[in-house]
Amino acid sequence: MELGPVELVVLTFLGERPDPDVVGAVAKVVSQGYVTVLDLVFISRLQDGQIRITDVDENLDDLGFGSLEIKAQTLVNEDDMEVIRDSLEPGTSAAIIVYEESWARGVASAVGRPAARWRCTCKYRVMQWTLRSP
Image 1 (cartoon, one colour):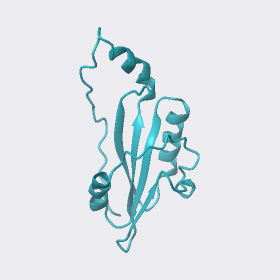
Image 2 (tube, rainbow, N blue to C red; image 1 turned 60 degrees about the horizontal axis):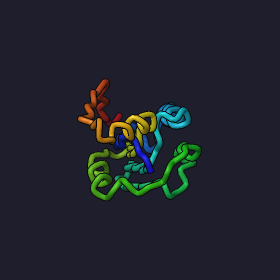
Image 3 (tube, one colour; image 1 turned 90 degrees about the vertical axis):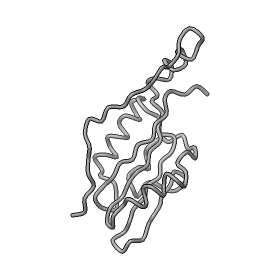
Image 4 (cartoon, rainbow, N blue to C red; image 1 turned 180 degrees about the horizontal axis):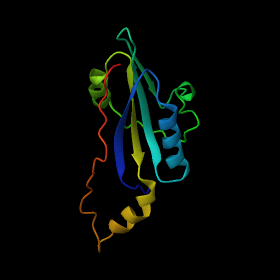
């Protein structure tokens, strides 16, 4: 199977559920074919400190991700989840999303041939959000 570049992003939220506007924005870029979601794990730290984890193999409808087309693969590992779990304050949550940059699939395939190589990928942070409890 041909794949474009694969990335992991962590989206954090104040509250125990994702922001519906963010879920809608993710769904839009997926439906337009720009990205393909390969794995998704949602972690909430409840007000009492308990952790709730919902992964791609479970019902994501309650979180708003139910209609999202996901090519389910287990890519988020226990180490990834531990880092996020440990960083969440009570009453906050995070979505760990592994996605393929589908738009680049053909380019990545062509660049993988002998006449060309993918030299590097650089990420520029446009905005930095800080998670703070209310």
